[in-house]
Length: 344
Image (cartoon, rainbow, N blue to C red; front, side, top):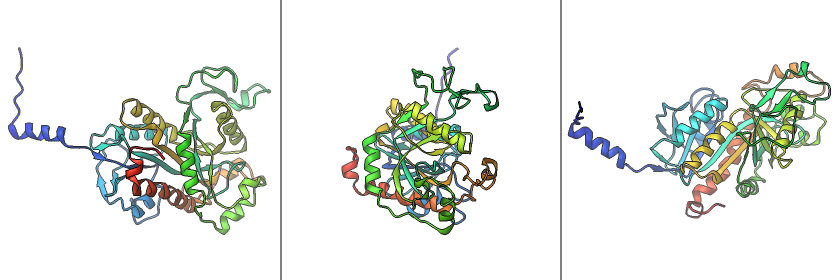
């Protein structure tokens, strides 16, 4: 038997209206990873400064993602992904497929705090990444059981020994952002003044590396994403080697976070579907803490205070993420007639 579906006229016209309703064009999507409490008015996480200072006053329900979205009248949309690659991938895919938004010309500014490699950068500094490398897709043998001639128990996926060549085909281990856009963002922001304080200076002086002792500044440096919050000198050495391996020596490990490869994987799929432009993606990570212990303590002792809100440069890093990222967002929005159809 054939069932004939009959819709009330009002319901039918409502459905047609939803279909015909134009999606809101977005100029910039600001991607943050966590917020500690409310979006405004309390102790901040990565999202709060953006909400308050960019006046992201319009709250948009986002039940299919981690947290409600916020937008202002200038075309800037803010999203919080949640911590870890899984939440980031799910949230960004949900946003990219949301029919309320036209993201085809949107620029994406991922802005969050990170652990810093003292061989490359200092506390409170901000690094624009050209390469984003995954630290989870791998084989692993416990370090207590690895052969004596191995540097690490981490082995590339599909390989049998650390850093085996030739590399296996990429399965999401590495993402190369548009180098011209990254360089443009760096040149635009390299003179931005970043906050410093006595606690940060004292912590920096505990490290012998010259880059670790520098005052906060803006640089170009690449990031490694891993949903495991690792810590320590030996794992930092692995991260440097891992980034170099997956980028054929072109990348320099500067920061470690937990979400960016999830975000980049979803954006890659969305670009294939024609939903976004992958050449318009930027990743900015700011140093809230070092990724390892200073020479005077153990890695375990160093991990104890390495918690959200207790990082030496927690608030200065949040400030740096907004202060540096804002310059790029403001430039794009203020000159949208130039950047809408043409990349910087």
